[in-house]
Image (cartoon, helix red, strand yellow):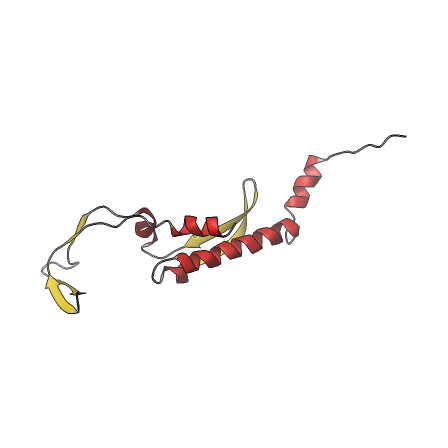
Length: 126
């Protein structure tokens, strides 16, 4: 007596790509967990801009986490030292230092180091 096993790669691939199937549910859970951690790890109000979804990618289903805060690239990649000037010609910059209001026409910003909070969330959400 003999037994035969036939593996059909096409069927396996279709099974793994089923919408609302076991694989998608697991991917959805993990993506949602990482997005929740990312929102907690994000500095300031950036966490409110974190969103996620599942989409069909070139190699199957993908969990995608996005942040559309206007400053997200500056926070993730850091900045070099740079000058800050008023937007309007002849205008001034206003900010507080040690509780005192300061007005000036130029700020020499020292730059900021990168803050890889999205990568940290991915590591923590595994």
